[in-house]
Amino acid sequence: MADKNERPIKVMAENRKARFNYAIEDTIEAGIALTGTEVKSIRNGKSTIAESYADSKNGEIWLINATIPEYLQGNRFNHEPKRPRKLLLHRRQINKLIGAVDREGMTLIPLKLYFNERGRAKLQLAVAKGKKLHDKRESEKKRDWSREKGRLLRARG
Image 1 (tube, rainbow, N blue to C red):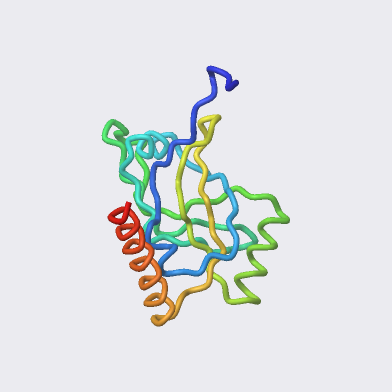
Image 2 (image 1 turned 90 degrees about the vertical axis):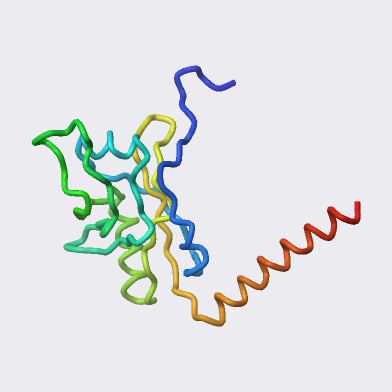
């Protein structure tokens, strides 16, 4: 049985278009280096990671273009909404991700921003390859057909 002090995983922001626009190869969980006002703002649920991506710089992985709005009660200690944020990973994981991006032409796309059981902000990062237009059409056809098949089975009984 779960301990009373453990909290469930709480998703604060999700990139729903990522699975449509990219073919996801692998996912990895990364911590994020945040300031106090950023954590409070994420807990309010206003952050977005829809247009963001991760990039390597000087042997580190950075989250670029993620929007975490300013905290209303933050006064002069507030943060910049679109500043680059460092992702916290092990050296072996960083080398693997940099290799995939450099050699294989992959992209690092954030899928979810959430708080884990211990209350730490985490980012689910995907190693993905961009889909072509015909691949997007194919996945849309599959999704529509599965939806229609479900309707037909429900109507049939």
